[in-house]
Each structure stands twice: as C-alpha cells, then as structure tokens.
Amino acid sequence: MENDSTVNTFILMGFSNVPDFKFLLFVVFLCIYIATVLGNVTIIVIINVDAALHTPMYFFLRNLSFLEICYTSVTIPKLLENTLARDKTISIRACATQMYFFLFFGATECCLLAIMAYDRYVAICNPLRYLVIMRKRVCVQLAALSWICGCLVAVGHTTFIFKLPFCESNHINHFFCEIQPLLKLVCGDTYWNEVQIIVAAAFVILMPFMLILMSYFHIISTILHMQSAKSRQKAFSTCSSHLVVVSLFYGTAIFIYIRPKSSYSLNVDKLLSLFYSVITPILNPIIYSLRNKEVKGALKKTVLKLIPLKC
Image (cartoon, rainbow, N blue to C red):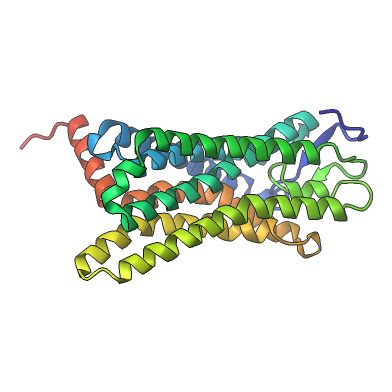
C-alpha cells in the first residue's frame, strides 16, 4: 500500500503520560501476557489430550483459545517495548501490519462467538439431532468461515485507512495502531470516511451480535419450558461461560466502534481498548475453566497423569 502522506513513521504515545509508573505497568502487562498465553495453551492441551472433550463445543473453544493467543500477541509485545523504550516510533508499514492482524483476529472472534452461540442453540433446542447437524466437517467449515471473514474485513479496513493522507501530527495517542486515533491524524474532512468505517464496523460487529441474541432467545425459551430443574440448571451452565465472554467482548467493542468521532475520547477509549484487547483474553481461560465442570475434571486428570501422587 502506497500512501501519499508526508508521514513515514508514527509515534505510539501509549501510557507515556504516567512515566513514574512505567516499570509497574511493564511488570503488570508482562504478567498478564504470560498468564494469557499459558492459560489458553493449557485449555488447548487439555482439549487435545482428553477424548471426552472432542466435541463441537470444545472444538470451537480450542479455536477461541488459539485466537486469543494471537490476538494479544499483536498488541502486548509492542506495548511492553514502548513502555520502557525511549524510541516509541513505528513505521507506517509496521503500523498497517499491526492494524491488519488486530482487525483480522478481532473480526474472527466476532464470527467465532456467533458460531459458538449457534452450537449451543443446536445442542439445547435440537439435542437429538446435535451430532448430525454439528458433525466434524460442518464444524471445520464454520471455523474456517470465521477466519476467512476476519481476513476479508481486515484487508478492507486496513487498505481503506492507509490510503488516506496523513499530513499532520504523527503522534498516535494509543498503545497500538487503532482506527479512531489514526483518523485524528488524517488531513481534511473525514466525515464520510468515518461513516463508512462505522457502517462496516456495524456489519462486522452487530450482525454476529444479532445472531447471538437470536440464538439465546430460543435457548432461554427452551430452557424455561424444561420441566426438570436439574435439566434447566445443566442447560444454563453450558451457556453461562459463553454469555460472560460475549458480554465482555461485545460491550466494549460496540461502544468504541459504533459511534461518531465527535463523541470519541482518546483517554477513555484507550482504557477501554486496554480492557478488551488485554484484559478480556486473560479472562477467557479463567471463565471457561472455573465455570465448566468438564474442563476442571479434564484438568485434574491431566495433572494427575503428569504428577504421580504417592500415598
């Protein structure tokens, strides 16, 4: 992508406004990154090792865990580098690359969460046909579709943004190359650019979100009509973890992307971006392990195999 801009490099401001806490921030972000990677790798290993977890639900959870590792690896390593380094510059090509992969993994997660909601819909509303509908080939195709959609969205957004002229300040008041802070640096009126981005983001974020809402409307309706309290509790427990993850991810994403630039606050949105790009990925393995008896049982069995216990 060639840009007619006079800007060749950007400066990621990050959290340079609190220099006294840079070592503390570095340690916190490093611990979060290590915990995120280890937690999601643990889930992937447990699902691969335990044959009881070789089901469609855990196939998609394994994809989500791998996605979270990639998602955090796009932003946190550069954030760690800039927290301590004096030189906070990033080339325009590196910035475009970071934006591409961030949008790629973010859009893929939107689609994957919608697919996981559909999986829970089939499991609860059509339990007798579940294994027929969600057979292995269909699961692979659905997962591949989410990754392909993420790739297409990332290509479109990144190409569109970096064809705009950047000719003012090159200081990005953010810790990674995000769409809204970059729009602040574009020359001229960006109203129509902003409208196109909001429409595209609404398509990517709101459509999967509406599918999730429709799935859970039918799920809740089915659960309420179950006669057995034990069956209702079991059905709800299989969905509660996914509901928590969806609420955390979509809550911040909708607030940041589906609104006009006039209501954009750099400092507030930087903190919100920190939440959904850094904090949420570390919560996923905790949510799925602490609230899921099958995962906890598989983890216990795996630990007992790796660490022989003597009476």
